[in-house]
Image (tube, rainbow, N blue to C red):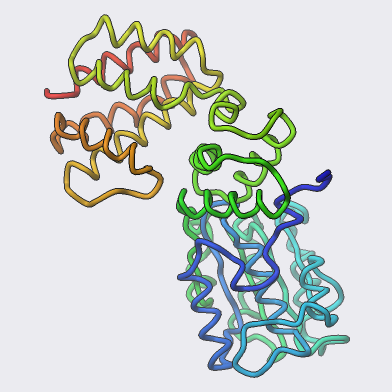
Length: 365
């Protein structure tokens, strides 16, 4: 019986265990190979993509007592490794801008402590999560030590909003971009984890969970944990769709068939059935927009995109034969407005019907 949060229990502890962020992890690997580390790192990208995990792994690399020269593999047993994995200690401090409410005094205290040599480890590492949430005064206070850091200190800043990081700070950091993780990567990871934990989870279910996570591994792991609790007799694709309040892509493809045929009565009838079967209309609209995205990829001939199974790609290609690039652009504009319409309209059913009619109008002019 599993009785722990998946995203915490299975947080990567080594650099090679971080999946879907090869561009960022390769930079760290090369720093290890050359034994040349920057004094400040800025890890930025969407939530749940591995920034804080990578920061802890980097902290372990910098402080591990048994890491071989040129290697990125840490021992996992020494004080440095244990402290980094635990989220901080005397010489590795991990702070969250939300937890300290962006206070300048907290940052000043950290700066003052950074002047002292490490007490237990060979380096001092300061990790600031959600860095963009710091007050302007706190960021100004941090600028000087990042510009002229003590030789024994490394700063690791993590943020989901790169735009709010002052250029004076970001320009002094080695910047590592964390992208949304591809659906296929997440799906494969969920399959392997399910096997490891002993969960009966179908491949189709993993695909659905990955799609619904929207590039966020933490969300995917939480959804898998939810499915493990709520689905009896194994986790199937249908069970996941029911749990998430999704109508299933077969019905969505039937809707698109009616749209491309410009058969408004049939399209509205299918749309009504879908509407009555789903819980999250936003999630449904997102799924439909993903199909439009893949149709656009097919129209321009870029090959099968991430997240589309072979059988699904066959259906996408069939639909794409009735679309032009202008159709895709026009319909994309319709989806851009749907979130706002759902927010302000008292009748979501009307919004969805209007969306379907707009798609019919946008297809083929």
